[in-house]
Image 1 (cartoon, rainbow, N blue to C red):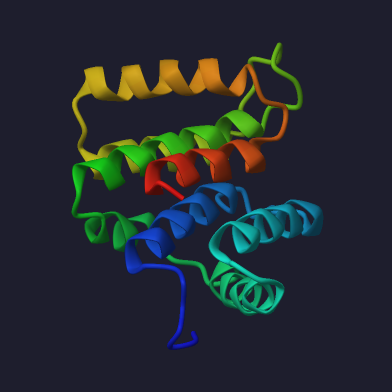
Image 2 (image 1 turned 45 degrees about the vertical axis):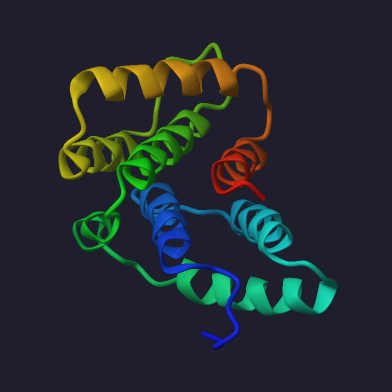
Length: 157
């Protein structure tokens, strides 16, 4: 990691949650990883040089497998915990090949269920976040862009 990182520890933890859910089935295609790295490096950078530095930083920890049990306790704020749930839900929803499919990748779904347990949010909060996320995702085709857009709105960037 560079000392001039533009990514805060809580942002890194949120991104690691996304990776942990996406990698639960052991599959993250090079294309999916490239899209994630591109979207988030653009998001955190203010110029092309920083974009490349941040992309390398994200690449480094994207390949590090960190268990949800290690990540979730790092999310101290309720807002961060709710955003982690939302991002995790976006990931499992993205495993469907089209919106009409009911199938969600079983390994990703199990990881998401574990995330819910670890976050220990009220059932009503989980249901509300999932419903809002469903509505948002039904309006966007690209889940990586949707995730980055949601993080951008949350962080006020």
